Image (tube, rainbow, N blue to C red; front, side, top):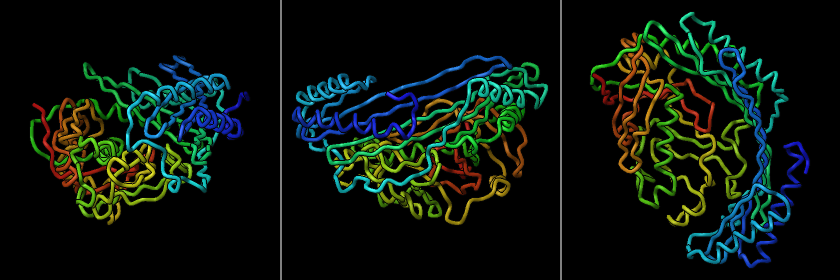
Length: 448
């Protein structure tokens, strides 16, 4: 097999998928689907100017799922030789013969599959030698350590580059694949003043290395954030306005997506059970899925089942328009797939009136808490009860007055969503959910 992992491997991987589907058909499968991927990566970490790790990653794998009527069997292998692939198909078929029937099992319906595969410009290889990666990590950390003499330690700076190619096919005649890349730079620094020690970070990630923030600016931002947290205090227990910074606001939207995905709905394990067609946010909030943004980290021409991805209004005027569905969960609910097997693709959280710039948002906050970091996993997906450890800054008259830590913020997600007062224009694009700061009009803060 060729050494390079890029788009030139797609014909080879298509052959593996086609052969596995043919083998499954010969063995009696009524339907089958297979997915083959190749991945490679380089990650380097420097701590206090010294190389801590240089990691190479090179992975390959194939997974196949077969259906004998409504009986399903799956198997996988990291060996892509013809013999290993054939054995893996046989194992999947053996499993399927002994599983229970499931009326909702099966491939995505043929009419839902992607036929035109758009080029979304997702593949931007970075010819990054280990020596260059180390120097970039060193420069990143050094820039951060130079910010202030109170930066006394480091958890390191890392530079990573990853590239992969994936091909998916099924017995409905779908067979397609594409290469993609992701690159990142991150830095974590510690600041100390007397016995007070605080830690903070910053990072950048992109499909194209040319779109990354400079390593120096990432280091400086990490250093500045760590120093700003020195002198952190606790707060008295109270109710107050809470402003989520974009990097933590993404998590609020993540809880919403978990609640409206099909598996949570048919298992009746969602605090938004049966919420389609109902008001779930204030009327100024829109959630739009845009899977075909060029070079975006969440973009994909088709989902995990080969279903075409398409633009969608998930929430309009604050009203939930439908659920996040793959084929199986759609059938369980008596609905159609939404092309979300594997999750959403580029979810944009927007305000109909336009995002508020951060200065105006802080003024609207007035006096309250700006949250920049969350700890713990205190979220109940069934009831919506929410309780997380937090740190950030206490704001008075729209101005940060001092850092805070060792507090807990609590509420119920349904109420929190109802109480969203504004969405910021400071959108964080470093992931599949694009959202600015989120201002919530009241939450409980537990402290001293």
